[in-house]
Image (cartoon, rainbow, N blue to C red; front, side, top):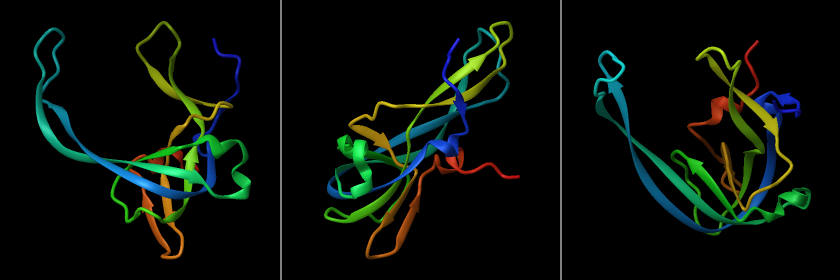
Length: 149
């Protein structure tokens, strides 16, 4: 059992400013299961398209970045217009995500916990290119936005 207090995903998001020094791009094929799932039987899979993963080499730029200055690269899933040399504002969730269950059933849910340690590589869910007022939203953005009431 975890003694840490569970948080809402949107509570973990920090707004940070960076300078982009380099960009690496990789496309990943995705697939999905089709048909009826039967225990022990082979699963038919079909190609479900591609997702683009960007890894930006960055330097902390904002005075408010503090302990987040150790971030050296940002991972972003989705299309964007960031170019080498741009200054960006990034929304970065700093949390640990775990699947939790009661130990008796197969029902699990995702739980989020505040994380004190900052990695050299973190994932961004939103990028704003400063000076061009262009915004990109990650495929994971909705997971970390404030709950709809």
